[in-house]
Length: 319
Ligand code: WQD
Image 1 (tube, rainbow, N blue to C red):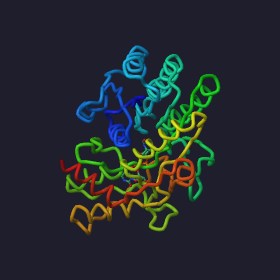
Image 2 (cartoon, rainbow, N blue to C red):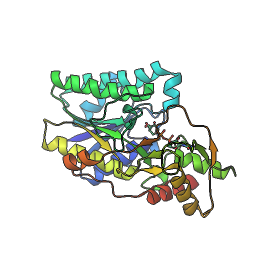
Image 3 (tube, helix red, strand yellow):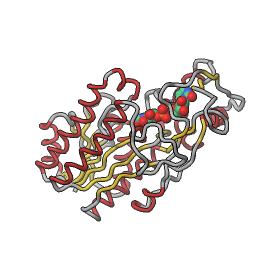
Image 4 (spheres, helix red, strand yellow):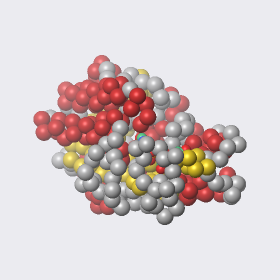
């Protein structure tokens, strides 16, 4: 049996592909290379170049590779872009998933791991976000993830389908330099970009009700996150009745100032400090996962700390 990884040439997808292989699974990749890179697909792993929006590409993938499960990561993930182009996000993320589910139904593919996001929660006013914390997404991006989860649950009533939705918290780092995130859309690469420009990293607000006043997030190493997907895949193989939604985080809150400090220490600028600017609209003060359910249900716990995330991200950035 083969797992089809959609978006397998992307940053997170490339890590998931390697984790699945390391766990002994057969893997094929479907990717339209819109943001992915061919070089990230390991030798020997079939790459179907196409989009999940194209039933013919899906039919090819399912027909040629004895696919019995899908790990669906293909999609758009820029929060700001989703505000400017909401309908594009609904097309890519929601319609893309609908076409995928229809094709899975048509080809008898019954297992799905879905890449969801902490963005589904919006601005949770709790110390630890559990999967039962009410979802109130603040961006079209977060909404497409929540709608995706709901569509999967509805489809699972009408077609044989077991699933694990994984809500990612703040993903960082890389397993090796060539697999690093190549964009600078999140805090850690944005700090690197500023350092390279000889400018202080920007701190979006230091007047939050947090110990040092800056925003707190739950950063998770992408290699740990990838292993959460293999744990989900194993569960789906063992129990075809699975219908699960889990957070993927460490359950540890880290502030913007703490991240800047770690970056300073890793890059040999121990005095590195940020320049405080206005809050960024829509940013919660704190977003930290409860990691209990994923541990209990999938036996998965993150192993890598923030320093490993920053060191590996820096190695990738330098490359
Ligand atoms: C982290 C913290 C900022 C840049 C988003 C999405 C989420 C997921 C990950 C997609 C916040 C602060 C940032 C900077 C700063 N996306 N910050 N200076 O917003 O928590 O999450 O990305 O899959 O769904 O919402 O991540 O890395 O942008 O910010 O002070 O230059 O760093 O305010 O507190 P965020 P982020």
